[in-house]
Each structure stands twice: as structure tokens, then as C-alpha cells.
Image (cartoon, rainbow, N blue to C red; front, side, top):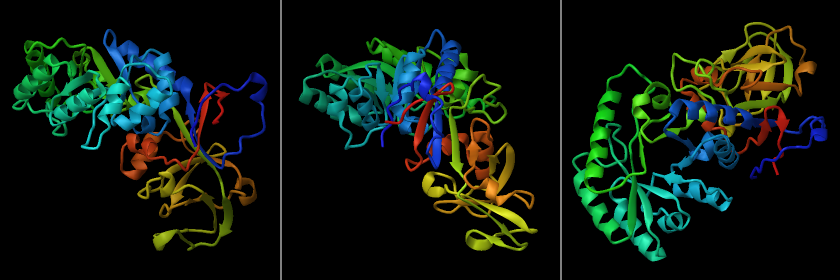
Length: 396
């Protein structure tokens, strides 16, 4: 199912209770708030809204539109096949895709005016694709300044620039940018960021000395945008901050002036009284300590809930409870104590994280991971419902 957001008329806001058994609510008003915050922090640099991985699980098209409406100038995706549907939906903003394989559809990217990141090996393939479609490809040279993933090493950069200059002279490509990625900007005290920025400046100087006129020099991710103004250059690429989450362990979303965008909630599937010493879920590694009430929450690792979750927080009716036992494929269980009424719990919404519930960071801690993973892995089995500051949006 795809989700095209539009505002419901005011008369429809009081429509019957929504029918979703489980839902990830995406507040586009919070996307707009976060974009405006990041744009202000980055200025005069422009903001690239990173919407890869279906906008970190939030929905690429609705988030892209909200981000561009609120001041973002560029969109970023990892793969070309993430960028093309955005173009097909009518988005005309500058767009960059940077992670390629031998099977990447460079021809469609060039025809759709998608800029391409180049680490080195891709350049001949991109040039051939440009020749095939009789268009000039716009490329950004990616430099490995210390992260050790893709990107040209500084040893390789001079020969890459020579190759690029020949292809640009032939009209097959145009080098419009140089970029890299920070490895430890989420730990601002570490010196490696200074080292990376030094290498990046050297790479920019080399590229400009080779005769290229650059439109975009960019290295800052969300933590770099928030903590390193000297990393802003012409453009910053923000992902996790766009979704209202902090990249820092010692600073919350609220500390940074960001608002979380996703709320994950699900209706309680079952609740029942059990005796003490009742085993719970696979492995029976949790047993009840007293006569109590067990509640069944119908989402599991098939929905993106990490199997590693331990005593993960869930809010029901304003009360905080914790998961008990292993997360299964479709469900997990909570021990809510002896005082709850099972009949009153069945059908109630359980909020795993988001508005009126725990913070995503609490789930990340319970799963031994980071907030990026919690939101990104929520699967397509969970419908997305778009809201805009309390106004409902349809999912048609």
C-alpha cells in the first residue's frame, strides 16, 4: 500500500475511531518544525533532507514534500531506485544518490536529473550511460576522509580527477560537487572529526585546482550540523535530525529543539489472569512472580520490533508497563501486575513510543541499539497514518 497524504476536511476530524489494529503515525508538522530548526542552524549552508530507506521508515514521499515545503533545498537517497519514484511523483528539487552497484540504472538517473555520487569505479559506467541517453551526468566526487567505506582515497583522488576532467571535456559528465561522510561526529570530543575536515578541505582544494567549478561541498551529517559549524560548507545532509531524534547519547531531542515524528501504537490483542510461575513466550526465560495479568501486544519482529528487546517500555492508558519474555514474530507479552482488569485492557491502544508514550531512545536502550534502527526497521506490515499537527491525513 502506498500513502498519499492530504488533509481531511474539518468536519471529518471527528470521524469514528480509526480502524488500525497497529499503526505508525507520522506527524508531518514535526517534520516541518525539525527542518526549519536545521535550516536555521545550517545557514548560510543549504539543507539536504536525507530520505533514504523510505525516509527512515517514515515514508519518503510525504516526508520529502514536507521537508521541501519547509526550507530544505535538496533530497538525498542512498540508491538510485529510491530517487526515481520521487521524481516520478513530480518532485523537481535537486537530488543526490550515492551508493551504487554494477546493476545501478545510471541511464534512468541521468534522464531524471538525479545527481550521482562517484567513488571511482562508477565513472566509466556513468559516462557510458550518459552517452547512451545523450545527456550530461552531474556527479559529486566522494572522498574517503577516514570512514573507510566508499569514496576515493586521497592516493586515488588525483587520477580520478584526471579521468573526470577528460570525461567532462568530452561533455559526458559535469563535476558539480565533492563530498564525504563523518565517522564520529556523534561523539563531538573525538579528534578524528578534525582530521576528516582537514582531509576534506585538501580534497576540495585539489578538485578546484583541477579546474572544476563546484556547486556543493558537503560532509556534515546531523551530528556534524548540530555540533560543528566548521563542517557546514555549502550543504549539510540531515537524516536522523529530520525525524526529530538525537544522534548524541548525552542530549535528547528536546535538548536539541527537535520533535520526534513517529508514534507507534497498537491495540491490545488479549489480556488474561494467570498464576504465579507462569512461563511467558519462547524459551520460558521469564516467569511470573505472582498471580498477575498478562497482556498480548500484536507486533513482533516481523513488524520490526527487535527480538532483543528486554523490559521494553509500553504505555497503556497513561500507565507505563514493561515487556516480559522474548519478542516473537507477531507479538510480545507484558506482565502488567495483578491490579489491572483484563476486560478493560483488551482493545486499548498500547503506545510503544512517540506522542503520549515512551521515547524512541528508551526502546533503543531496551534493545541494545540506536534510535536510528528502531524507527527504520518498522516494517511495511505496519500501516503509516499521516497527521499534521493533530489534523488527520488519509492513506489513500
